Figure 1 (cartoon, rainbow, N blue to C red):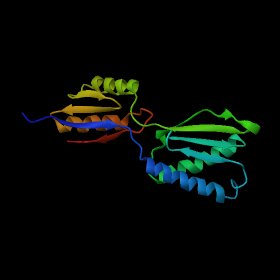
Figure 2 (tube, helix red, strand yellow):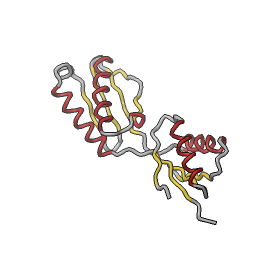
Figure 3 (cartoon, rainbow, N blue to C red):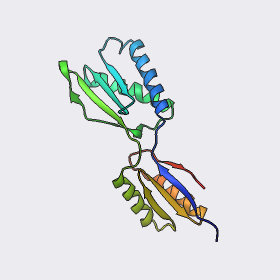
Figure 4 (tube, rainbow, N blue to C red):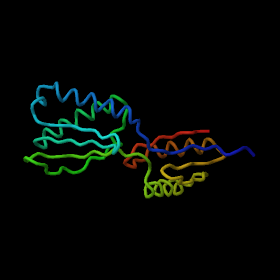
Length: 165
């Protein structure tokens, strides 16, 4: 019998593309006439993998968020990869949003994905390996069916399918 084929389910974001999108958005904040003197700031921390957006009002904050989202989409970064906090009050009556970049699949979500695959009665084995899942099967058609099923499902984070062999 042939060796099992496999692939990995991961959730990764190209941080260089995120940094490039941030640089473009920050440049547009300085140049755009409706946002130039609004007092809105956008900061990106590479070590924390998070954005800090401060603006004088919720409306201006949403505009800045829209500018950043546009730049991210143009650089092929999935918007599900950023989870924004609820608006927080900041000094001077301004509002602050914290956007965290989600990397890896959490254990609870990994178990849920595993359970969903098992509920579909695919002839595959699933292993949870840290922040990724590995799916094995002797049949490549089964693996393709699992990928199609997972693409149709929405888990709130972007999923990529790597190491297909």
